[in-house]
Image 1 (cartoon, rainbow, N blue to C red):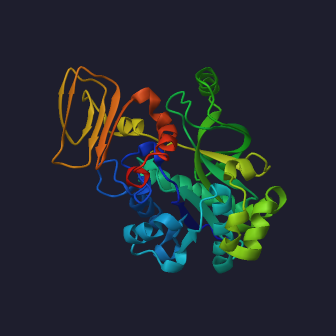
Image 2: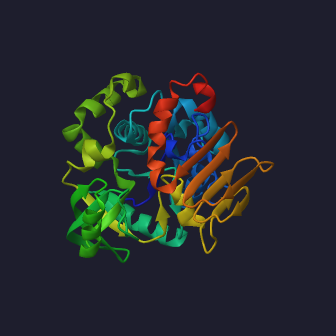
Image 3: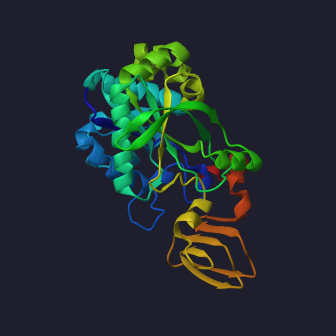
Length: 353
């Protein structure tokens, strides 16, 4: 059975916690946040092309709102490999529809992988080795393989996967049955998880044969799969908004985890920039900054002609982009999404979002 992998990039997210840099028409996946000059979407495609073997085997699923931006970012992507959702309904409909479409062309025994467009990967060689091992598991077993991440610290912002029975070694990497998924635990629980050595962070990357996932969706989420099978994307307006974790992964008995250690960050909010770029400097400065008695700040200015000046502050996120300035304590960046809800009543909402 073929172990070749057909990657599908999930590129429909809004990236709201990177506002004001990330906005409706220019979401996070279109931004370069690591200093490489390549956007997160472009970097994701670069990584996966090696596994795909060429652009004709790489797919992207995105929203109608930003589809044209995806085309501009990835001009080599064949038009027939770009799936455009009429509206966002979370990842369960996206995975179901994309799997159906890939299976039509490649057959139901095709090994498919789903990869968010906004991840940072540090070690490409280790990453590819992990993907090859996962593809082998998916090709040989009735399995839905999720890539786990070796925890670097007791994070309360990630979901966790507990390793159950060991299935075997593939390419020198151990694979386990999933014992359970846990969503974003409190700090005490996260620390307990780390101490056991049996937990991985949930990366949101999945690899499986199309036939396996379509069979499991038919059992656990027929209300999502069947309308898509019958109507294609025309069914979107009637579909439940649900993540693939809740719709399938927490229910299936075919979930496996392959713990990886290849340098990973999901770049969830502005604090991720500090994790990537801090080094030994007092602050992370992406833009012209003049500071006095300033420590632990993350400072970003999109216009090189603008200067941000700080005096006597610490642990702040300060972002200046076009017509918006954000000032927030680093511990409260998760609340940006709530602020965006408030801004929906602002008289200049279209300019701000």
